Structure formats: structure tokens, C-alpha cells
Length: 515
Image (cartoon, rainbow, N blue to C red; front, side, top):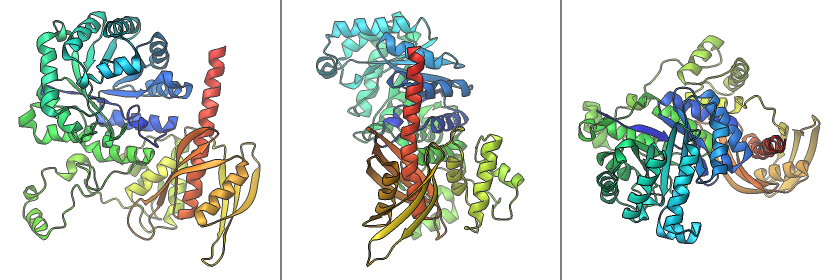
């Protein structure tokens, strides 16, 4: 079987999804799960984009040891140097340089001639070769580029030191037949192509990202790129879990495989969904809630007689095997620690103790605590050792359908004081947010509000996701509680705290740069 490298860009291209704003400790948590999943390369971020991003990439590079960690860079010395600063401690550092090659991008975005683009690409790769042992070069918008120009520039960057050549379908424009033909064209006409690996990176604007990626594998690419759950810019990227399962189920057809631990598929999907706030559609392939559900009587009858009648993927393959260990109010620390290990949670003693306390509080409200409940609590228990600048101390809501809703909140401020305020609103959530805004004494604009439950049942945990604008920045936030209103308040403050944390990180790193 031919080995296909998996290049995961959930933390870079995936985080560019509208409304997604991951905190540093959340990016690290996802990176560690991707390492457990078995990806070959983690694209941790775009270090030159901000001091906070550089810091997060550096922390991932320090902690991840069993796969390569990459950083994105434009074709400029400053970007490349920032990436090296972030990745120098990585066990296997890699740089990903991109430069547009399509006529429309070169003329209107870069305002460069093809010859100038070629020169800039070569210069960037040569500069990167001073530091990085592995350099991936991407021809942005390759599928709308002139193929003969691609042959010229790919030949030149390989001679300059590139070790991987990526031909991305940046705007999701191509078809499987065209994409496969492009890679075959490169193999036939680039004289030094044998010195590099070829990589496919597809977007899903026309709904063909996975199909295009599989066609590229058939055409001989050595690496595939994408995101967990198919998140990413616009309509998203290739869903890596779908490609991996397709290769496994149609093994004899594709004659290719990855080194992914497929039993970690659902766990990885759920973690990314919870931390990004991007809900997985129920009918999504492989990881959707309905992927293994059968409602039709004919289907149910067939599955009961032989699962293969309607299930080509065994649930156990993706990590949906049942477990008899049920946790409740009488469960002890040992059973709870075993459940955390089973769920792949890597916790410090302080984080475990906090999570266990949260679990015990929850058992007073729920008879049975599910895996999803524990994962949701874990998200709130792990904060990278940081104390939240603003923390909800208490909340009181007075609601009457015939009167104005009034809310009173107590919030611990950054200086340790607890400030109490009250305000009204057209509804409970509006009243809560008006009150918090009064405590902050600064304008806050709510951009998005969503709510979901971790499981079914009246006692399910409520998860609220919001996006706010504060101090000229926007950020998402998440709140988890048995009470929807409490979860709403926590989500709002979480979004505010993320903005404050980012301000502090940027200011600290800017100060270091000045020194």
C-alpha cells in the first residue's frame, strides 16, 4: 500500500472560518488530539499574522513531538523569519510558503508580472532553506493558473530547495478529472519532480473537495491537506476524516493508506466542533449524528439481519464503540480518571481536580453523565493556567411575560473587585447582556448567538456560543451550564476575556520585540 501523508490545517485554514477564534490553550488541545489521531503534519498557524499567533504556534511546537509542526508564510523574508522564531524548538519544523500563480491573482492582487512572481518565489524558498529542513511551496490558485507557467515555477522552486509542492484548488473551482490531469501534467513535464512530494489542497465551494482530493491520490500525490469536519474559508476544506475512511473502506481500489488511528475520528471531530463552535451537520459523512442511524423500516430490518446491508462503515472503526462504564454521583476519582484517559484528555493535576469538582457538581443535577458532558466540562476546566479577567460570580433574572425582564449580576473584575449591576431588556438574554455591558462600562456588540445541548433529555447541559465585538476586535465565546441563562452569561464573558487575553499577549510580545 502506498503511504499518504496527512497535512492537517484545522488550526490555520480551519481557524479562518467565519466566527472561529481559538485561544492558545484551545489550539494546543486540538494539536495534541491531532497528534493522537496520527496526522503527519500539523499546520499550527500563521506566525507573522500577529504576536499572539506566533506565541500559540511556538507553544504547539514545544509540546507536539510525534509529528511535524508547520507554519504558514507569505513569500517574504519577514514572514519566514517569524515562522522560524515560532518553530525553532519543534521536533520536526516545516515551513509552508505560498504565492499566487493565476493570472487574475498576479494582475489584481499581487500586481506583479509572471517573471517577478517566479523571482519572488525562488528568493523566498532560498531564504527559507537557511533554516528549515522541510519546505512546502504552494502555488495559490493553481487550478486557475497556466499549466506551462506552473511547470516553470515549480521547477525553479525545487532547484531552490523546496521539498513538497502543493497545487491547491484555492477557490474550489476544479473537477476531479481536471485536478488529476494537472498532477499528471506536472509529473510528465517538471524534470526534477522526482525530488519532491506532491500535495493536494482543496476547497469545497462546488462541493467537490473530497472527490478532488481522492482523484489527486489516484493521480499519484503523496500528501493530502484538509481540516477536521471540513471547516475552513467560505464553504470549507477537504474533510480529512472522509478521505481517510474512504481509503480504508475502498482499500483495494485506491491502494493507498494513511497512518491515522481511525478509532480517534469521532473524538477528534467532537473536540474540534466544541472548541470552534461549528456544529457538525447531522447528515455529514462519517462523523454526523445520523451517519449510523436507521429510521426506515426496510433499513432497520436489513441491518438487524446483517449490518453490511446498509452500513459500509462499522461504528467501531471511527471510535463509536459502546462502553459499560457509567458515571454518576457515586463515582470516585479513580473511575473518573479512567474515563478521562479513555476520552484522550491529557490533564495536569490542577486541571483534573477542577474537572472532577465540576463533574461532582453536575452529578447533583444529572442522574447520568455522558462522555459528551465530560468533554464539555473539560473545555471549561482547562484554561492554560490563566485567570479569567472577568468572571461571573452570581446571576439573578426576574422574568414576567407581562413585564420588563430585569437582571442583576455580580462580576469579578481584573483587579479582584466584585461589581454588581442591574439592567433591563426585552428578554432574559438581552437583559443579561445589557447588564454585563453596564459592568464593563464599554460598548459591546453581539454579532451571533447560538445554543445547543450536549445530549438529549431535560437535564442536558446547555452549550451557548456567541460572537461579540469589543474594543475594536471580534471574538467567539462559549458557555456551558445546566441553566441556559447562566450558560449565556458565561459565553458572553468568555468572548470578552478572549479579546482581553489577546490584547495582553499582543502587548507583551510587542514589548519583547521592542527590546
